[in-house]
Image (tube, rainbow, N blue to C red; front, side, top):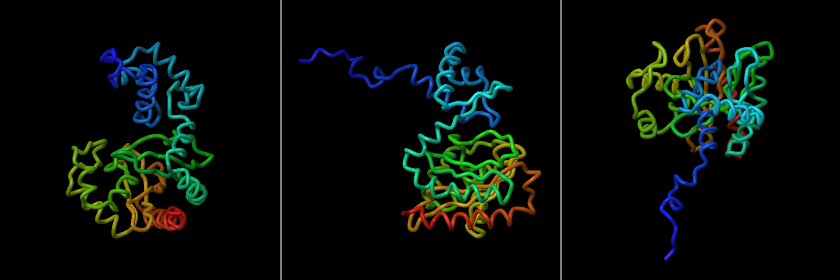
Length: 260
């Protein structure tokens, strides 16, 4: 009979605490404020002391998994996360869509992004930001589906049973504009199916507006979402149809190679 202890055979005993903490810090930062998280905020969110958090973040910064703003000292997700995303089965889609995002950004003067489904939400895996703008990168950030144009664009084309499963939990009201009732959201999704694109104005964060369309390869659920977003003062209601036409055209172009 083997004399292995229970601890040796327990899955939890195989975990490395420092790795768990580093992953927790990255997840906290990815889910944190758009402007980034302070050392204290990230440490408190993960329940670890600040000295430990500082050492872990310094290592992550050195490997470009997080970036530290030299003025605000806030941390955001770094570009190395994009490299991981490319190796997670979305590299072809990123390569296909990046020139499209670049053109959208140049045509509109706003940020253009690509998001893909991840668990019960979406994760941004590529974006192109106008060179004149100083903005926080969203690559690697996961967002809720019901409060973003990208999320609603994806929900609109999922089978009804899948949509219900995804939205089974109570819907968080991020702002007073967030639709948290199923009847409101279902009306949104019906409109998206009619016009082909989605809009969210101040639903996840105040003052941010996005217009999105889903990439649906033939006979498949949505595999990605292309978005144009920026401040509401630059994207008023009058621009919705213009930007909607651009993202739907972008999606048609992307679909030409998405299923290759």
